Length: 265
View 1 (tube, rainbow, N blue to C red):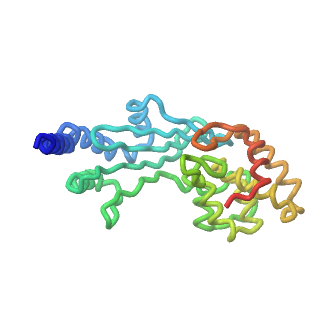
View 2 (cartoon, rainbow, N blue to C red):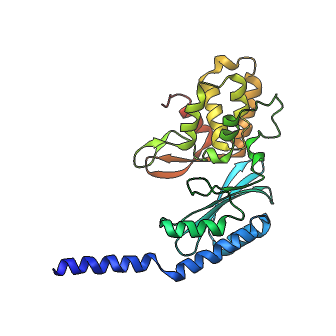
View 3 (cartoon, helix red, strand yellow):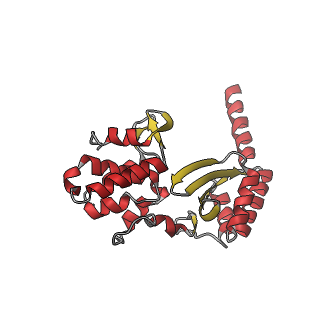
């Protein structure tokens, strides 16, 4: 009987906790502010900077870099990846979260609905500002552009900024690697060369790795691609990777040469 009463009290406390009106109010104020600023990138960046003093910066090379930040209020958080060219903010990807409670979820979707697209299954889509620029190759790319949605997505930072093979507790394929494997059978020589000019450094290195593993396919382009590969290595000397459960930075040239000698599936 005593254990039964304890369980009832725990459930009642949990229900009170899940209905905390102060947390809901904090979330509403944060969402209201985000909706207000979503069309003003600079002010949105300032707001995130005020709320999160320790964002994660990543160097993309060739003047591009990203600042990843997450802010929270009550039940939810909102993440945003801000993209810069030198000192200028040029793009962002804003990713709101929703509470698990169905009743709360519908209420929160109403607050977001003025500026965010809601799916039929009551989920909220990320907000993209000027993001197509990152689906295109670097300005140094002078060949004919291959217009393919999957290739464009892989060239962008959203395909994953970690370079390598497998990692994490379950040793799963890294996101960028998994996407490349899915694409690989459809890629010809020209597509690989275009990927070498991605704005995503992990995608650039994976394409260079492919070139190093298959030099016989690029005999006529060897001099051009060797020079470009060295420029790429200089632009981002160290790349994020996972070794088991441990993340860190490794020398870009050394790790790319190492992976070019193995086949990851």
